[in-house]
Length: 421
Image (tube, rainbow, N blue to C red; front, side, top):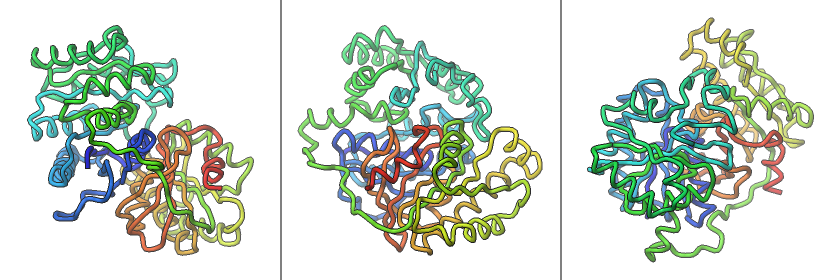
């Protein structure tokens, strides 16, 4: 193993893993921290997927340190802390607290932070995060039900979450190339800065940042900044050339989509799917009972499986989400949806569904945990950051795609299955 990564949610983990496969590293995603003594898989990179983004900070830190301990024992040479390309976190964490713990455990002293992912319209300029041409806090993320982002200034956001200081490697420095970036980060570390937000607006910038960080013990960011890491290992003679690092076993059988994300992107994907596929909407306001919602969805799907992919969606616009949260409480509302969709996933797999797309990080975490999935072998990409995977440890063989709510084109739910054809 060359690279060991820790991701704060399950879809973010597959996003990172997909980036590594695309750039030539055989990659396995491990669901949760592996038991002590479990041997590492045959892979160049392992991404440990946690459900820690919205967990209490102390729990997020503890789980992240446990993952780091296992990855170090497994022989990883460099480490990566993966969070969302929209820097999803609350005012107090969990990006800062987890990064602080990892920096300290590795005695690194310094780490860069770069969530940019231009292929999905995420860029950082003068320390501010943009979604397309819009500042993060005007992009719709300010309405996120769990991690509302009301400030696009990442230097300021991260400074609120750490007792260390945060600097900036600005656009002009990044545009000058890897050597200049490296010198700027070294200077910031010598000044006592613990972190540097690093600007990036295109893939060339990400490749240069990755090259500049070749000697760093820890890198933090979105999957985009991992783009340049495989080449560092090749340059060092450590990474072999693989003919097809994303080869997966094919599976037939019914296909389905489960959507729990309420992001703008996913709402558009559900709306598009209504024009082409059978879609069932879970109405948790009318039926606030997870078991009843699951039973209704599975009964609806019973005579449709084996035809076009079925779509079962709990996705809802902000006003409906707010109404459900007001009625049940934020945590209880989220738990209700996660429990219902996890039960539906279990029922679909029992009905021989073998190709399953899941939209939403929290939903994906609930589904893979219910199905008992232990690891995912990463395969072909559907859209930037969203690959098909082969699930291991779930009993029945399963092809699984875990989609971040913000990712994917409008026709994603249709094209996902065309990639397998």
